[in-house]
Image (tube, rainbow, N blue to C red; front, side, top):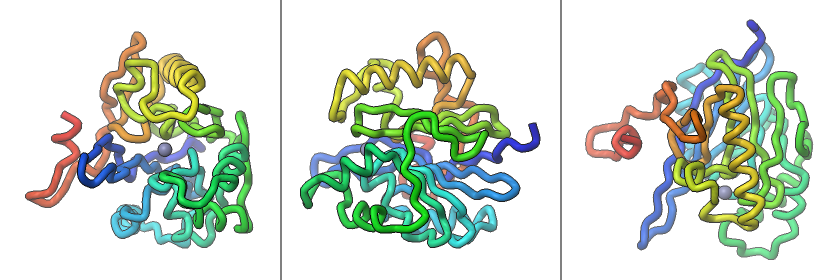
Length: 245
Ligand SMILES: [Zn+2]
């Protein structure tokens, strides 16, 4: 099994909302590396750009080295950095891209100009359930939060990693079996159940869109032993380790 991906979590997600400033949109971003591929799972929102470049540099990766990006869905806090990566082939849900590009301008969560760019861009593959970006990375339909939401199961040096995106935003949604912000509550509940069962069966790390990595045992979430490196912050700034405690 030496052809599994090297796995790193570049950004852990966090569920935050402010009554004055709304959500900072701190979503999870994953990195998969093999001999010939350097793949991002989601890209975060534009506020991540400087830190994203720094995080990649820690692995000696420059923006032009990224070979592929797998997007879970077309919300601003997950997709907005693909323009940094000119050489990347982008994988995006066919259903989600069609939905997002059909919305009127001014949607609250879909960055319409980025979506337009994605529709026009070369080297974009629209995908559906079961699509294999590689034999070690497959897409799982997980609709609800958005109509064509995709999650990704990767075989890695830390075992299977299920990158759920906003199909399961955080531990609360996993525990409740229901999603807080969804376009289809019944579909979301089904997706949460299916992904949680798969995680438990395969003993996979569950990376939620806006939470620390989890594992699922007996239908319950437990913090993963993988503690991402994003815990170190300058004094006086919010430390995710506190928020995750
Ligand atoms: Zn979302």
